[in-house]
Image (cartoon, rainbow, N blue to C red; front, side, top):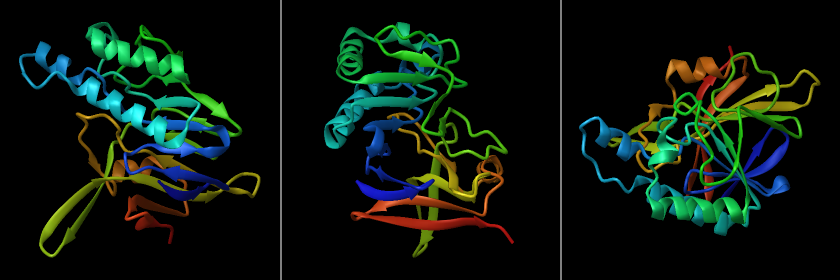
Length: 233
């Protein structure tokens, strides 16, 4: 885990694409897309149906590593609203154990707006904690600190004629209405079967406006690597 200053607080970004909020002892993960494998199988595209197990194992590891007492998901928890009904018994048992071990909050997304919390947890559309808004999709024009997912950002770099793509968080910096440091962050997708969008894509940069600057951040060898994406003129 590497420290990350955001909106006047210290956070920890894990190598496994999760964000930990020490003051709240909360682990934040975005875009789990559980049961994506079974969704595609139902549409004739057969891929290994074990993505939910792998994703939940990674969540459990992040909880152990951080000592989190709370888990908040940032939407698109299942690949579709019926995904929770397709969880096979083993994966459902894993999820039930996790939702009993910690305070678990599901924020719904555009893929699963009507999902059911069949294996535990509480459902909300968005939540505010100590002035920070947690939702699935960044809201253009939001002036308060905000954490979201949806875009699956990936840093794309060309090094020595080789293209490197790596999941990253995208962070904007701005001054809040009260004059205090503010900003917004889009987390990388956490799920096992999730692709990604170029972090510098205009859709991401537009979603985080207004901003003074926008950077991609990734953990690298125990430190935080920051790559500028956009800066106000």
